[in-house]
Every structure is written in structure tokens, then in C-alpha cells.
Length: 76
Image (cartoon, rainbow, N blue to C red; front, side, top):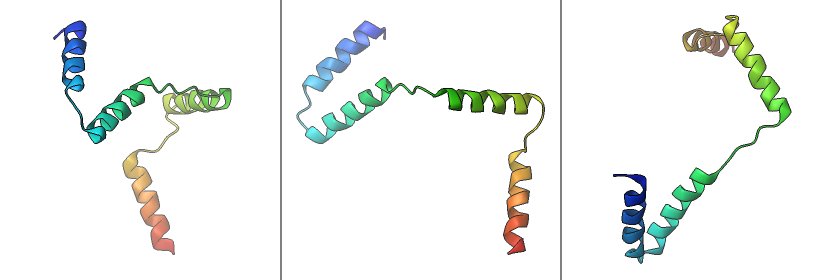
């Protein structure tokens, strides 16, 4: 179904709904799609540094981290 046809179909179906809770759920879904996150320079720099660390192999795998956490928990 092409976008225009799909939009027409959805609008026609939504127009038939009288249940406020269902309409609220639809609104919540639509509002989530409009959310745009703008990162600060600080966060952009942190992401760039993280990417660089990954490229240089400076990271732990999930298994390695799980092992470290297990060791830490057993020290207590």
C-alpha cells in the first residue's frame, strides 16, 4: 500500500473510533514519531571519543564485562 493510500485508510479507520483510550494510544504513537533529540556538544564529543575507542579496540565485550561484574560481586 502506497503512503497516500495508507494514510487515507488510516484516517478513515480512525474516524470510526469513539473510544478515548484507543485514540489516546494512537496519539501517543504518533507523538513519539515526532520526537527529535538534539545532542549537546558535550554529548557529541563523548560519542566521538567512544567511537574512537571502539575503532582502537579499547572496549570490553559483554562476556568480559559479565566476568568482571561476577568477580566484583564475589569480592563482597
